[in-house]
Image (cartoon, rainbow, N blue to C red; front, side):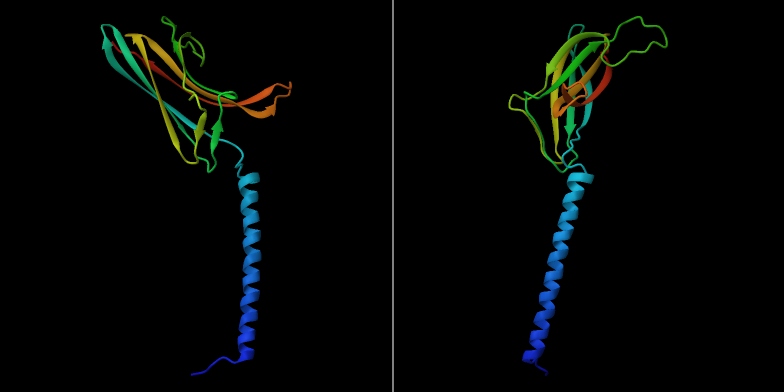
Length: 182
């Protein structure tokens, strides 16, 4: 069995110290690159919210139907999305699609008679944690045979100004059309 001498132990210690210093420097450089990617290239300060909307029509009373609307927000980012009521809004708009339109007529989002406006914004603000999903529900009683457009809209001030010097807003919106069956 061969034992290390004092000189060999000093050499091994020096090699390990050098290796430790190189690895430490590499970790600092790697951390810096990761931070640069997250905040500059990857846009960690930016926000994204995927929104979806689903409807379900249920019998209610006589010729009235209960339309249940599910709005889902999903935060796919690794950062928290935090919006307070003073700088944002989260609403559901219900608009009646006009009857008697001719073939080829185009109905733009936001057109039609406003039937209901539902405030979905929580009183204490909206917080979407990283990679989380939030579901909201609203119900509207409508007469059978009508066709309605539902639009869910999340909007908030982003802290910048427009070219006119007014506060700029970011938003995400989703719409669907539902026929309230007889």
